[in-house]
Length: 380
Image (cartoon, rainbow, N blue to C red; front, side, top):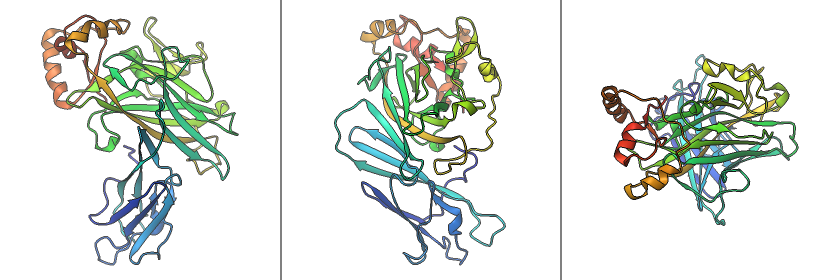
């Protein structure tokens, strides 16, 4: 959860909304506690949209927008589309207005008619009246030559993912993955379980314990990566990928990068430039040096930032009859360092109480022993 946002949630019986296939209407009580201390309309936003009317409905602040107008994130699963964003109230502490900040998740679900496609999720970011960016995600085959229709994965099997941004008139821009977090829910603020796949402004840190890496060749409009399928203990095997994407001028990246860990030589390597030392900070803290960040409506800086959720995807544990076949397909994954039996038993008990990510990286063990040995701590 973004620490700059106010805590959940709005006062009871304050926020009301209704969605249809293309638009949303939100009404927020201007006097939440009926004590004549009113909300400041200028401090209330729906995604990136301001209040559209203070008079359309008496005693309410109203938002009337299309679902593509306010920076809603979007998840496509079959014929169902889920749109979501946050209603945020951040008042000026010095102003004589309702003083309590809040944040309320707004969800809309719509059914659409569409042909089956390997495209799992897209989001459109408006840059101007006629220009936009379309972000898309595709599961790919192992050599990234064609999309894959596989939606369910065995625990530990490789996932090949391509993330693209259709640049339109912005061909000089480059797409980066600043952060990726895996969780069993689409709402990180309500999830105690999570696993950090990419952090530190583009360091694929999962590569230190698994066969995870960014994939060549370097392309301005596409990021390709692979990582082993994982699941969380005590869940139904569904996972969501939470991405923080950046589209930036490649001449002014100032710390944005795509770094993979090469386990055979124990070092980090920058995609597209093996001799660069830009990845050396991945073992500590990497920093960015932008003049300032901007969102999709601000054209004053060298790029944009957008968050996106991809999923849900089903991760299946191999059953006993399929263990040999499933595990042999993962034999190229490195095995984590051995752990003493006494410490392992204690670690398993602790991890089961917390909720952890499970990886498949061993070979030819029975399934119960496999899951005991492949428990990895999650990062929060």
